[in-house]
Image (cartoon, rainbow, N blue to C red; front, top):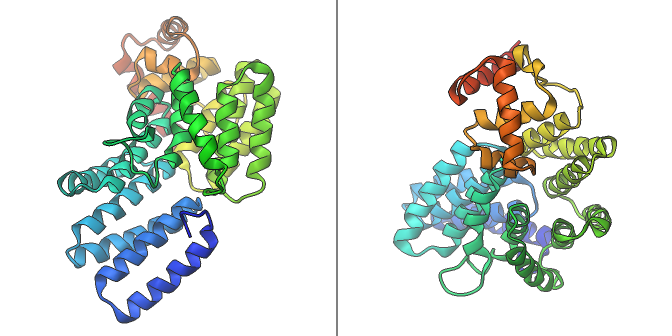
Length: 355
């Protein structure tokens, strides 16, 4: 049922299977039912429920000595963490899943884990890293991603590839994704397809495609995917010097992410809002108020450890522009190194978070 896109029916069936497994045992059946239930909730965008089922499933699998099942639950937890904004949890669960997957040939667990790492990269604006991870997963053939989830990862790959100039690879992926979306296997796929096409289109078509994507989102549940479309649309509007329109889209994205517990993505939405001049909660404190919105975004990226080239990719500007702004940031704040800048930003952010 999940493979056919009937996620509600799959949830009911998996819930009944779990109840029977708990009543009759053995543990391995409980862990298997929890895995299917968790994966179904993940597909439906109900990440907190997916986490609860996967955590229960992980404990049950470990108690039963079922390392392979435990690896699949670790992989699901890594994907949930990539939404909830915990890079440490992503790394912990992905590493645990990949260790068993490599030893036992578990292609599904390995694919989910790499997808989780890539989605965590996307949430932090690390586009090149995300594209590099996802490229091998979305292609067909041996030693590629698992067939059951390969298409599900395509929208993430297209976002990363399109925004790093890998347009041909992105277009090829979109062409296959369009054929798959037409089969109705995933309720979110039509909206994601329109979003992918918007990222690859010219200026005249882009806005129309983003609007079509949002209309499709209205037909299905899923705050996270809708928020991602609003975030990309808002960023596109901002870069075309339409800050008023961008703010509306970005505020909608922020609400969607906060409602769905996607805290890492909410941080990205707030950063985009700041770049439009929007003043809201969590605004800079102390010396950071001396910076322009763009300078502040660059300072925060550098404080996270990003190189100038990585900052340029995140903000859709040239490395030369980053160099120029960073020199002005150093001068305005009176710092002489990236280390000093990181320390200053960290102190200021902690002051803002804990007044």
